[in-house]
Structure formats: C-alpha cells, structure tokens
Length: 271
Length: 276
Image (cartoon, rainbow over all chains, first blue to last red; front, side, top):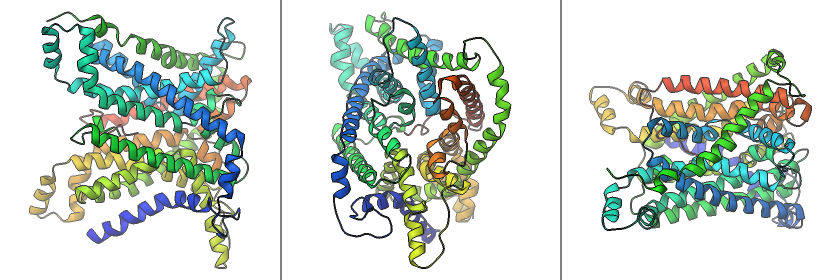
C-alpha cells in the first residue's frame, strides 16, 4: 500500500501539471513549434506586449476584478451581518437559497440568464444599457456575491455576541458597535472574500462570454478569440504569465492568512 | 431581549434587492423566453422541439457520467493516499491540488491541447521515434480526457476534506479486528467518506455536462453537447428562445440530480463541499 502511494501520488501530480509545464517551457521557445526546443527567447512575450488588444484586455480584466470584488464585498459584508441577525427562519432560508443559486447553477445558465435580462432591459426605451463594461460589472459582482458572503457569514456566526452586548451596555450605539467591534472581528473573512471575488472575476470566461461585447474584452475572452482557429505561441506566453500571477497571488493570500490569524482555521473550508 | 437596531434590520436589504434583480429576474426571463416565440407570443413549441435534441442530451449525460466515474476512480485513491501522509506533506499537496483550480479552465484546456493536438508534443515525439501519429483531438476520448483533467481536483478536494476529518481510531479498530489495508479502505473509509464523494460528484458532473469550451477545443467541433447547443443558439437573436428552453431543461435536470444526490448523504451540512 505504501509503495503504491509513493508511486501514485507523484504520477497523478505529474500528469496534472505536465500540460501547464509544457506551455510554460514552450512559451520561451524561439521556434514557433512544439517539435523541438530551439533556444531560449522572449520573442513571444515581446509579440504579446506589442499587441495593443492584449494590453487593453489586461486593463479591462484588472479594472473589472478590482471594482466588482469591491462592490461584492461591500454588499456582501452588510448582507452577511444582516443574514446572521435575521430572526425570521423562513426568510433566512429563502435568502440563503437564492444567494447560493449562482454557485449551484452551471456557469452557462447564469451567463445566458443574465444575457436575457440585459436583452429584455435593452428593449425598454428609457434604460440606457448596452453590452460591455456595465453588464460585465453587474455579472461579475453577482457571481462573486455568494462566495464573498460564504466566507464572511461563518465569522459573524462564530463571533461571541456577549462582546457586542458589552459594548452596547457601555453606551456604544448599535452602529458604532458594528463598525468598531463586529467589523474588525470579521475582517479576515472580509479580506478572504475580497481576494476570492478578485480571482473569480479575473478567471471567469463562461459568464463573460455571454454578457460582454467585442469592444470590452477581458483576458480570458481575448485568449478565447485568439485561439479560436490556430495555435498562437504568444498565447502560450500570456497563459504562462497568468499562471505566474496566480502563483504570486496564492502565495500572498496564504502569507496574509498566516499573519492575520494565529490558527490556520479556514472558514467553512473555503480557500 | 433588546430590539434589533436599524443596521441589523436593514443591512441585508441591498443584497436582497441585488439578487432579486440579477439572480431571480434573469431566471424568470429564461423561463419567459423558453415559453414564447420570437414575437413574444406564448408557445410550447420550444419545449416540444427539444425531443429532436434528445441525442445531444443523452451524449452529454454519457460524457459527463463517464468523466465523473473516471474522476472517482483516479481521485479517490489519491485523496485517500494524501490523507494518510504526514500533516505537513498533506498541506503542501493540498496547495498543489488547489493551484490548478485557480488557473483558468481556458488555459488548462488549451495547454492540454498543446500535448494532444495533431501537431502537439505527443505526436511530434511519436514522429521522432519513428511511430505513426495518433489522432486524439476530435475523438470522444479526448473530450472525456479534457473533462477529467480539468475537473479532477474538484473531486479530490472534497473527498480529501472528509477523509482527513475522519477519526483515525476507526482505521486502528479495523486493523485490530483483523481487517487488511485494502479491506479497511473499502469497508471503513469509503462508506464514511460518502458526503465528500457526493459533493465531488456534483462538482465534476455539473461543469462537465454544461461545458462548451472543452468540446469545442478537444472535440474538434465533431461533438455537439448541451453546452455547445446553448452557446450556438445564443449567437443569434432569432434562436434565443430555443436556447432558453435548452438551458431551462438542463437546469431543471441538474437541480433534480443534485437533490437526488444529496439524499444519499444523511448529514448534509454543506461542509467541506464548497471549495472553489
């Protein structure tokens, strides 16, 4: 059993990482081919950075990830607080089930449903909306919300309520109790929710595919369009860069997580 | 008991408004489009037309089921082996397992193509050692392989989470009572880890059955799955209604199967299931 485990684990991980490693290695290949590795070169990276479209897509992706995760975290933090204090059980269950819908539904259904909403809204004369930045922002905020709430909600639930009661007894108003006691206590949850929203937005392709327009492209959409017909080695470079970015981000998240709290406890198993 | 403050009462309101507008309303529009024609008149035509898509539904379900089964076969032993290791090694391996989940599906599928494509690494290697090229992209095996490769971590992680939470004394007791290692795995660990298996199944099956990128890339356009059908119908305004009907039916099918799956687990607390 033990020897089997020793062979099996590395083998599966090797298979899991092999394709990504191939892309990273061949993104540095001066010859545009998978046949042989000619020599190390940054040619494809140069080509990538000379493409104005790629840079615009990067800008759009970052903008979208920052703004949508901020909105989702803002709404989600208050929502988690409100939900944790809801007295009506039925209302609580109803809100939680609807909240989880975008997480349960396949992305494609979320995407087309939002697309249909926007199509319908556009047929109403006084709503000035068109596919692009605004629709993408709404969609990305919507699919990040459940994840943000799920990473904050357990912290509100685990919190010792007597601390808040003490603050109230000592003359603190409910609002300032929220901002001075509760908010700082759930801060780790808020930060991980924000990070989660950021990466989800950066990563999303399926939902964006349905609610965007050709003049507002994000990186995944750009990759999709570029790789539609042929193999492009500058896309290898882009994919490698994105993998590196994720590595750095993941490292930062783990690092921030271990500094923020003493015990490595993750909220509800969410990473 | 003190009265609820203003903030406690109303802080969830923006969220509720948001999800009513952007989660509930869109789903209502899916249903609306599914039951109307292009002029907005009520009709059952879109739904009755779906019988001609039966083979697509069947193919998608088959592909997704096969991919899910392979993921269990590969993923369960992996999760089990990892859970038997030293805690420190476990942590490292879990991070390694999660890393691919953070990398865009697009990139992972595309990188798989770098190996499997006709001019890909595998074929150029075969050529160099003097063997004939094999055509992989465009076969059903390639599509299933793509699903397995893309979604395997989603199977392993929930199983690992439940396994690592299990009381190790169960295994010791089984060993004391004369159970062999393999037998312990099948008779003790597996039944106890069912909740993880169930959430793993949902997390692999749902994206597999609704994918369109994997079948477009690795299927070489020769396979039409539900996802492809939906995607194609939403390219053109005149076919939105049929696309909405397909989406609606798929959503309902998935909701039913997820509900049935969750029946299999007695204590379904949703814990360990949600890992992005």
